[in-house]
Image (cartoon, rainbow, N blue to C red; front, side, top):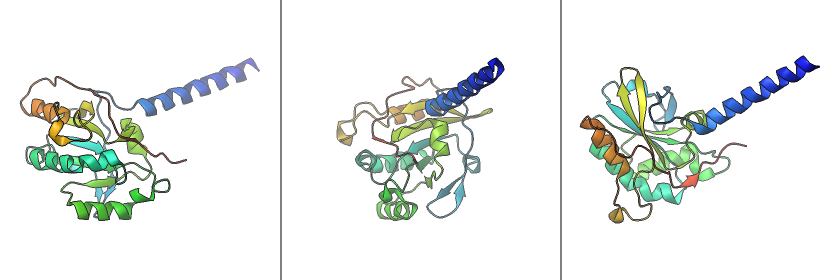
Length: 203
């Protein structure tokens, strides 16, 4: 009986640790595991395919969230500014389309065409990638720096400090992080709080 209780305790502790890890996700300095997700053009996309990239701006976003909508033009501007410099946008929709039909793959395709997205917009159907990253909201950003050991997390959090009005932004966190990486400098702010809608997890 004592041995059974000990084994049960170990099992519970293991589950707790794994659950905690999945909730916490990546921190600055961690190396990101590559993934393969379906893009709006039907093709499967992975980070390893971008051989010329110096890093990535990974953004967990969606169609329906007002915060995500407010940032769409700013996200396109980031892609336009940094893709040619080696830091393309990789947008990922982590939401459960059963819970939010507006975030279905079909609606992702329509929204991307309507808005003229110039970057991959991927569907995280199993939500595994969002859990690995530790994403909690839309939008939630991870700036990755490609190193000899892999894609390392260099910044986590918000795109900037104003969710409502782009003209009133005072701190451009993502731009500052990418500019620092491009210039071989330390990033002054490596983590901020992501502000947006909570990710709609599968039940």
